[in-house]
Amino acid sequence: MKRNKNPILLFKPTALRLSTTVAFLLALFSPYSFAEDGIQQARELINQMSAAGRELNYVGIFIYRRGNHMDTMRLIHKSNGEGEVERLVSLSGHAREVIRDKNGVTCTFSDNQSVIIEKARPRKYLSGQILESIEKIVPYYNFIVVAEDRVAGRDTWVVNVMPKDHYRYGYQLWIDKASRLLLKSELKTLTGNTIEQVMYTQINITDSIADELLEPELVGDNFSRSEYSYDNTNTGVTDSKWSVKWLPEGFSMSEHETQTISSNKMPMDHMIYSDGLAMVSVFIEKLEAKSGTEPGLSRMGGVNAFATIANGYQVTVVGEVPQATVQQMALSVISRSN
Amino acid sequence: MSDNIRESTSALMDGELSAEDEDLLDKLLSDDELKQKWQHYHLIRDSLQGHLPETVTMDLHAKIHDVISSEPTVLAPRKKQAIPFLKPVTGFAIAASVTAAVLLGVQNYQSTPNQETTGNTIAQQQTATVVPPAQFVSFGDAQPQVNAETSEQAEARMNRYMMNYNEIRANSGVRGMPPYVRMIGYEAK
Image 1 (cartoon, rainbow over the protein chains, first blue to last red):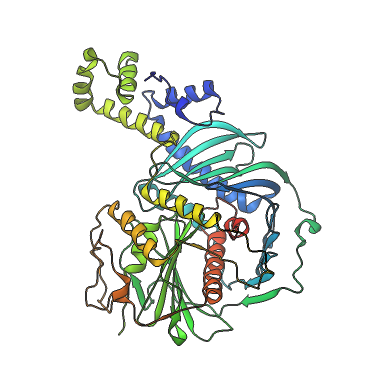
Image 2 (cartoon, helix red, strand yellow):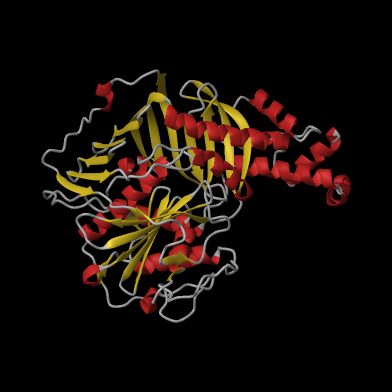
């Protein structure tokens, strides 16, 4: 086997600037603990990346790829004092659109002619959570800035976030040096398989976004509509009647809400678990008429779900985590009451 | 660290150590600094390589995907169906075997020490409170007589869950990929 002096050359595709990358590596092996600085830098970049994604105004086109399937989409993101407004449009395949704002989310699908609307929850998520998250994440992932690269014509830092066990996914993130926006990302398993990719081909960062960019193109007047609004009683993390006994290390419940869907009187328990980076939702519903989703695994790109039914309740665990995680969590749910 | 040792370490990683370098192994075992460097090399290499062999799970998914995508297109007018929102891992039997394969690869877990009052386990009707690891639990035992929902109802339910999940994901935690990309990009087959 031909000896490779530089491990960077094993990276495919090799669009990296080798000289700078070698400098990186050499710096890593210097007597100073640049390794620690590298980790600190990586964490800081991720913080900034997350903030930039929420706080900047930008319009971009990206490719979404999973397995052999590719799609392109346009994203328009606006942020002002009132919060975010965001519109995502499919540019390939069936016309689909999502618009999010402070009132809720509207998804319009042309392929089956349906509109799904979810009203916003009354509570707010604090962006301060992000900084907390990073501190919480550190024991369960390795962070490292590994290289520089170019995406959408812009210079980026490449940051790896690698899980320490099989229960979470890892990420390779290309972060724009100028704006800290995430321009390319790959979702990876612990063993390095890529599950999904998102890569911008164009991005424009602007001071403001014209209103017409956020108007829906896909108008679903004749489409079937489903509307969900929630009377959320945010009961806090300790009050759940249910508990998930098995969790990967570092996961804890960050939110618990009881949702009553207006069209359906049965309340649903929704618990959110997180290790600071990965999030998993556990939905528990009492089933009417003894019917429920067929149990088992399903997936949509990087999101896996596992449904199981017992004692007249359906337990569904959904998250951007490996199948083993959603499955084991679902099977370990117990109720505290009888 | 001298260049010689650095080069030798790199060679050792690539499996190309020659006989005269074997004392490097002894050095590696005894020198803490060297051990650290070793870990760094591996960290970087592992994070950049993307060519590791596929897991059983991924192979099965690929085969299932091929089967589904080779089915003939239906030319009759389409009824109003819910989007097959989440691609199921085909039928229950296959889901089971995929699961078993996945679980076999999963490391043993210790039951969590902090237990609240034990209650009825939802997944098992027995009194056991902890699901043993790496053991495939047969759903047939745990499931009472339940009629599967129509596929439309099931899709609607899963749609609702996914909307919920996406919105949580969009509003909290680290923002990475744009939210809802998977819903917009998912193509029903």
